[in-house]
Length: 501
Image 1 (tube, rainbow, N blue to C red):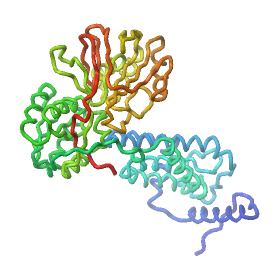
Image 2 (image 1 turned 180 degrees about the vertical axis):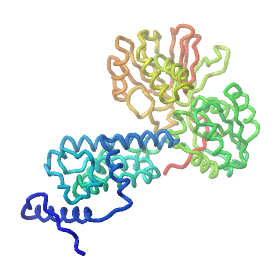
Image 3 (image 1 turned 30 degrees about the vertical axis):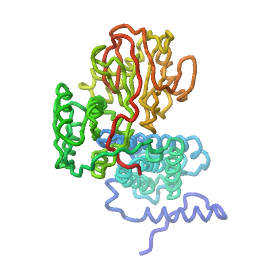
Image 4 (image 1 turned 90 degrees about the vertical axis):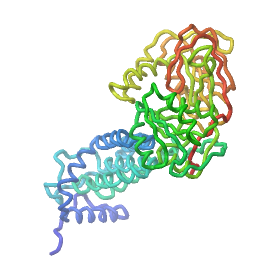
């Protein structure tokens, strides 16, 4: 039986445009006349769920929450950012450039049609653009999550023809625009894989296949450390894994340093900080399994999963990194030096850390960080200190272990963890601290302005602090007893690290 004939919804233009339209219409009518039994219960609902990007916002939240890695969170964020770029292009240029009417629905079975028909022009498809942009953005950061999202994105794009609200060419053009938006964003904001590999002076470390002669100490109360510990046991059957509460962490690290040929640690940046100090004193290589909320140090080394560390242990691949140092340490003038792998800070940030730690057990790490940032920006009294011999009010003093590539005072990625330099950033005191911090965050890394300054130094001296002034180092908070001297121990620590791709 021949296919039914449907009326043309639009006058037929002549020439190349007319031929294209007739071809597009023929494909649309052919698809409308086919029976798709498996698509009926799914595609119309899927098409409606993608209205205003709601489907993709939900998918991004799921990826970030259940992905369990920084790569998954980056994929979710890049997917949403790509969608935003595509939507902006569609709404400002795309819909107005070609004012094409929607298809006439005579050819489409009523059961397929949407209850609410779109009122905008047909070309290009905004749903297809958003779907393609989100899926492409996710895939550019994580191929695994991209493979999960791609079938859903393809189904959303197909649903627009299936429900009769777009011609096939509308969908193809929208998808092409979405893919282009994701790649355009990548040109402006490179993916993790595009960034140059960090400077990594190679170091000698023993190969420990299956974790032979490795003792891993796990902080039970750090982020995802307990779950990560089970992965470590499965991946490294010969390793000794010791789980302990924070109060016993120092003693267990010292004990572990005397048992193996390398020291392993699983936890957040504060836990890794303690392990790094022990490893440096005992001359042991350190294996870092990211198990905290932020894991700045591990991620800067390219360590995102247990598999990354296992590969480095099996091959004996390791690098040397600098160790930041401040004197006196947390125990006061008579105690040992304090060390930091990421950053030391005074002013707003210690208050932020304390607030985050207070709220994290109740609402979770990331929401607690948002609450803490809001509370910190409400502060009204700057810190008074002598910085390099000059008295000044400070909202924030940030001293990074190595140069951070991200602009502003907030920590970002470091390309070289053994550069021998301190990244010193200052937000000066005054009115409206929130606006000052925002302005500092968007300033260039070495921009000088009335509120923000950045310098590269090998050491820095801070004096005139009131006793009890809080400071933060690698997410831990302590209180000063007087003057502080901050410098570095170049290449003092050996860390197992995967080879850069």
